[in-house]
Length: 453
Ligand code: SF4
Image 1 (cartoon, rainbow, N blue to C red):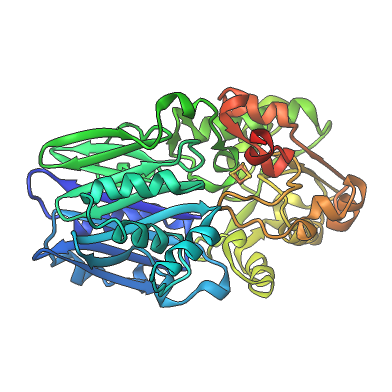
Image 2: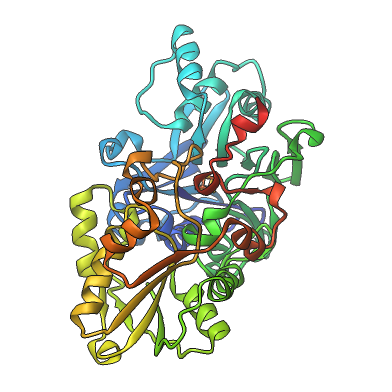
């Protein structure tokens, strides 16, 4: 997964520092690399690097620069892809001018597209999805850049939220199923596109709307124009990622009209009704993404909520660490239960999801070490049983805890007194979007490709 942010100032205000700040608000979507590209003297200029944003890019030097059109990207990548060539935005000066592309998502027909492009002479320098789009556009240099982009997007399958920098325009595009979130904002003549609305808040922009599935928004000196990747009637089946509401997105974001905070709280309330924990002395959430569901659980079960597990805010999200070794270390240094709150108590612990089970096992063990009498684990999403094919790195099926073990086995493995999950129906109801507009494939196994066969 990735975070993208772009800004175009119609009033010729420099936007580089705002793009930096926007990416800062999206750091939770990717901690492995960061990059910013902008137009300078008719060419594309970039700053890119590995690691967290502040390690990858020097804010001070950026703040001194001037550009009224820029895009940026923060990226989570598996370890083997962590090399500088793969850091986005990818950029080039081609026959039709400068271009830079930042992409969140996964192009599922990438191998086929790459083969076709290479047969026509394209030489790839990275293994990014974005480079394929760039080559597709370059091979249509008889077209205007925006027409070449639309043509390329029509050939792509899978998920994407894109920010594309052209010489005089900022372009945002969302795949026809709307897998990945993308919003449009505005402040005093400057337009912004961002993966999540929390990034608009940091630059003081107003959330205008979501970029619609299948929509291409073009912002330039003539204003804001909307194009379609495909005719609108082909976008009826939507697949907004439900995992965004469960885990990925920040709770202060609004995605496709639904507050992530409200959705998570409702997941907790529904979980309390489905799997109560009678006699519990306290409810605690696994920070940060389990905390809000825990508040909902506590409210619905009329049990005191305690911030009983404290997170070290200077350690990245456990799930986002790329190797098992780092991931295991990450849990230990990241979360610390407060002994005085757990000693002699029956505790209901709410977490957002169990993917590999590493975090759950370690935290239950730590809470028991604090002297808790009973530890009941409640998961505010259904079991993750299938890998994501649309850009969330949940790894192979046989590494998923709920695939490898029954509920009882998993409960024993993590060392809890009881364990239960939210149902798929409750997840859908808590998100508040119609079932036919939501992707739940990693829980249900209902992939889009299977539906379309
Ligand atoms: S499979 Fe899961 S993680 Fe992937 S897009 Fe669908 S809901 Fe999101």
